Length: 402
Image (cartoon, rainbow, N blue to C red):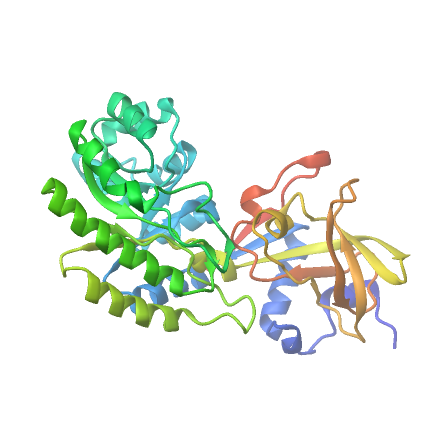
């Protein structure tokens, strides 16, 4: 019997969508939310965020977790992590203010202590105006060059400093070392220069690249950091007491990605081998905490047959939640709630730009205008870079399990 448009959108009653990656209850919930809120919707599951945070803490109990706000700066996510006791990595003044909203009512002394202990400004390049605003909070900030030292000395002399090192990014989905990080050969010179300017270097940091699947990057970076810490003590007599091991912790977007447990077991052993017990270890997971906590639900707004295959146009695209496919080099498979024999299909976004092509190889059943599709594991570096291109607004954010 043919399915009506409404049946197609909501799925046959009692039908199990587990083969699509969703439980029956989850499938029903997402479709009900789409009916209630309209589409596109970006559904954030806060219980999943809490599970991810607790898992990370359990795997690396001696590491202080600083959520990389840039991964997804939704204030609700920041609030959930704040309530769990999480610390925060911010990279702009607006991100700092999102975190600050959670502590603005604290007494001044308590608020200052919280910022000092719980926030690192991890962008090595900071506008003068930002430094001047931050200085009263005595934040922990990163740097990687002599010109930045001059700015910090002039405009934020009360800041604590962390030198970011350039380390191997081989095998990471997004490499960062071409833009950030001091060459290890000049690291001790920069640290000495900072102390000579009356500043205090408290730590070293590195980042092995986003979605790092080559765990050797971490071990090489740890060895480099240990060598620099030893040389700094020999040359300046100053002890480095903080090591920020950055982010890059991989999400299992597909089965080939090795589990975090494999990495953390080796990481823990290397940290214990190379550094004294009183070294403060920080990490900046972003993707790991939020990627699998969010699902996009969109609607088919057009249908055509092009280049020998069905082509569907949906009301979200590359300029919106799927922007991560460009900026983050990540693929989000488009899937349908409706069942049926699957065929290779194209999926396009709603704008009038041909660049707004989500995929030319989705496996989808025959769908109609008004049907719903979804994409999972889309919580990191996706809606964070949505635009209003062509006048189409970003997806509506919907929170569950708050």
